Length: 276
Image (tube, rainbow, N blue to C red; front, top):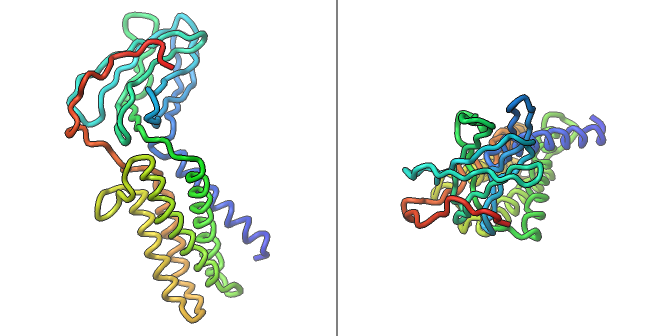
């Protein structure tokens, strides 16, 4: 395979897996398509918010459509609270109260113009998770390094499938980038966002941390198997396949979660009209 085609295929596979992971993740906005009072509506409901303020729920909806939002703290016995959607020009808007980092709210959106509004958010409540802001100077290099690790992993696997290329150099790059992105920059991002450096085994069940550890262990095995310059093609292909599989697991699945049993509810407002 020519060099251009080789790298094009590696980039295509990497981009496809990254996009799939992003679109299927539990923090990606939920797409809603529905018809209310003869009007076709299409909008997104947020599933992630920052702790800098209340979370805005806003979408385009023409008059006379109106509605409300019901919410409760996730995995608690709290009663559902109700917030009326307020009209702001051609939009309906509501604000869900700010939660601590890793705190989650379950919410449902009801729309209509009569006595029986329709639940348009689906049969299950939407889950919204709050996080502290992560500085741009950290998140950008983290994303670049992790993407580089995924690209080198894919390229190493492709190189190991043939006999013309020795994947050893790509294995070294994969191990180095995966270590920096997954065990240095990644924990720092999580520390900023949720206050913990590592939430995977043995301290928790965060799949993002755990899948990074699994991929790294396989690449470490491939690196050891290829010592003294041996291609270790079987090990490299296995590590590349495992990495592709684990990185297809949606990002933030089983991620950090605030324990509300340690923080009894105290005066969460039912609504906040005019919130910024």
